[in-house]
Length: 285
Image 1 (cartoon, rainbow, N blue to C red):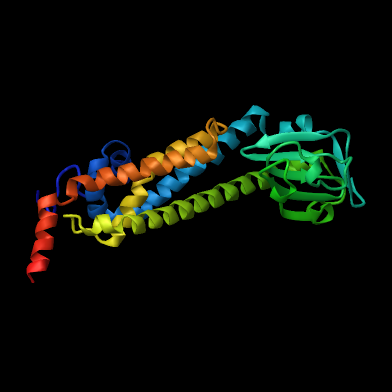
Image 2 (cartoon, helix red, strand yellow; image 1 turned 180 degrees about the vertical axis):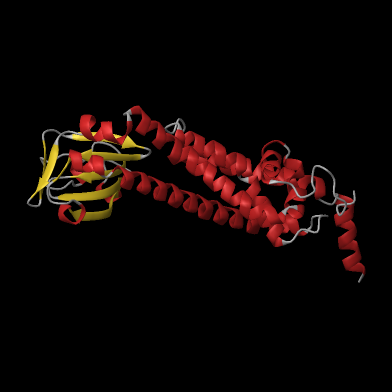
């Protein structure tokens, strides 16, 4: 086969073409990676936005809709509270989950510590004197408890702040959601680019003997594309509340990626006679 000749299925594949090849036509993936390197940045952006939509934007929008928007949340769901003279007071405790973050408020404690949490997760915990963000991976092990940040309420809340103040701050909350979405997108891009680089090094010996004129950069592109199905399955599992253990889901994603890389390279690998012939030629020299 003449790999320099462009065919309708491989010439300058668009982002959606690469997406479909990555999902259902893995044997064409190596060739597409070589011929469509100019589409790589666009594909990284596309996949990163897709991940953020799955694990943050859609669940967050669904949650906001479920409580009738921020105005209804602050006036009718959040208990009546007021911050005065450095102390936050509320008529009852409050807890809600937004995306994968648990937001809890209990003004009976000045600040939350390890023993105040009942289950693992990520928390924004608001006490009478302090607000902090923490992560807990094992509720029985205080060594798994980490404080991402911890601030006195005076650094975060304005004196006289109450439910009505929050309603007036709705535009700020939407802006914050947008920035969190963009941060999540950038984080996803970095994560899967590093994974692709790792796969490219692991399979360097495989791509170096390929019949394709495949550079390391082409291999890096292909390894990123090969993660597509694994990325979708792992993040869909997360978006659905981890129906399968995240560790198991990640392992499945890795196995799928490795299988796809092998399928992509299969049609372009020399047969055993060519490999043995190469050794014979080197020995004769």
